[in-house]
Image (cartoon, rainbow, N blue to C red; front, side, top):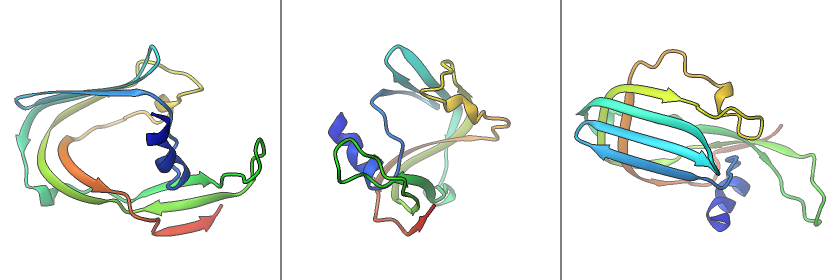
Length: 141
């Protein structure tokens, strides 16, 4: 929804757009799909999953560019900030297996395909509770 994507986009700089995500799970197999309208932007698959210890899973901090919203209607600021977020994670379940990632739709509006996966060593499925705290670092860009 528009309300759900406002905070990640405006506060933390995540480039949110309205879309749909779906997840299908089975014994040792997990597949996910991200789409916007009729376009499938990403398809992910994890096969041969086996349980791993939660402390063996690591998620790196996130670095985003954030455009500071204008106070005047219809005007944009030139001010950009670089924002580092260190999300807090509580991992409830985790599995590792062979992964696949595809980007079926390629468009300038949703350019997920510009960062292709070159060599996936493994994939991880996690069931987590997460919280996005205030930014750890904010710098002018």
